[in-house]
Image (cartoon, rainbow over all chains, first blue to last red; front, side, top):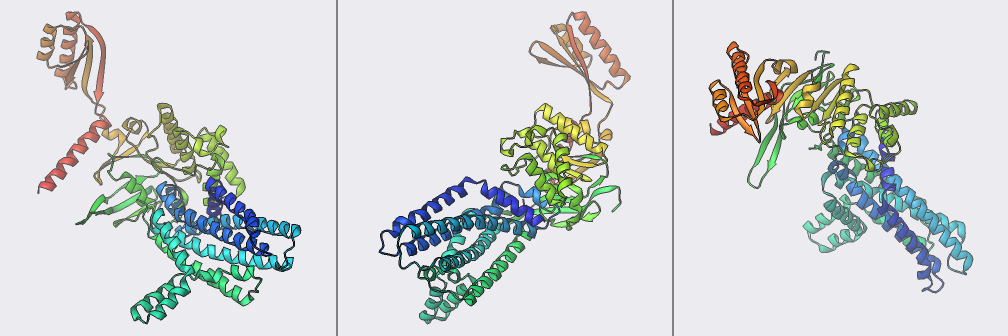
Length: 265
Length: 328
């Protein structure tokens, strides 16, 4: 119940923040404006709308997860609101989990809004134009939902990393590190291949270390397949989900350990 | 730990490592604190800025960990969290979630104690009434004044009907009416059998409501006394304020043992040692001299040994001891 209480309070704080609304409106404008971009192509409007829409959702989610997540704990310490929480009969892990769940709740709500807008834009565009390459309705939407689901699991990982940095560093450094992990996470395979190609034991070791330690976020990127209507297997989806949940759990455990040792001077 | 004690510490010490380029010298914020607070008391925890008062509260509440020593609150060691069910806390210059309304704010903290919805609603309404904020129930905390924030802070500290209420500088930043309201709340807690531990710089407020006081200086507990014991009721000196006193009378008064200080057109005559027969006779002779000189008597005030005198005296002793230790 305590985790739920803190989660709902975190959600309330986020939805009463104007920055969130500004970002959401901007993202919705980008999704709607993707129709204009689609007009620059020949017969590939729907693909462009899907691609831009998914990219905008992913970017919005990453920005919120990073900028809000990295300040979640630090703001409570700086403003001393944490004194009133920790002095109550709650465990510190309940506080961390509550904060995490609250931010994830915020992200889910925003993803739902953006997904609905994307579907509406696609439906209206399909009704008003003839796009021979767009595929049939139900299949398209089901595939898009898979892509959105994986965006959500990617955000789960990035949010957990942002909260970890929030417990150990300042907001500025935390943003830098979180975005750094996000970028490296999408270059994970390339880094590993670089290590192998270098034929240097030390470099290969470092690259392998980065590959295994940092999250491989390309596991959650199926935009190319969605845009080209290429089917993604259930096995791949299951692997990505399990990987996401396990990685997120490990990072949250480290955050909890960090929080247990923290002194609120 | 005896049931009559709500707080007990044994050699409780907290050191902070001072970061410098060359050394990492530990700074003792709290040095072997041995403190006992009885159930039902209003305990005033006094000390200058940086004495270690807030550090003590943070140690008791688990916000920081002790470097050494032990402490118990409501019979339980501070490493557990169960005792916090019976504790309420208001930090110094508190910050709250300013996007919440009063009702949402109190309800949030009530939920942390796992109260059901019906009980939470009842508690929130009762507490808003207690602290005089019923009309601000739907107002967001960002629109609250300083005094209102302090009152809502006290309300959240009482949400669980705590056995022990810890208030860090609850009277700071309040106007005289606000201070009176908070003092009245504290006294009402004592009437309900609750124990209050609070820190303050405002000695007059401490004198007005405390049963016991503890004075902390430079991390060391200097004394713990019943307030009545440390305030002497014996008159230390008498101050006589007059106007229009002539030069000749000045000399007479000085020869009779009075000390003279001029303040504008007024003259203040200070007479020490009046608890002896000679002292009483001196006052009588001085008053006679004033009357005969034709000066106008404005006021006569007696002064007893106050908490401020004790506080300043202890501070001086503590600084002397530190000076001796430093030179040694």
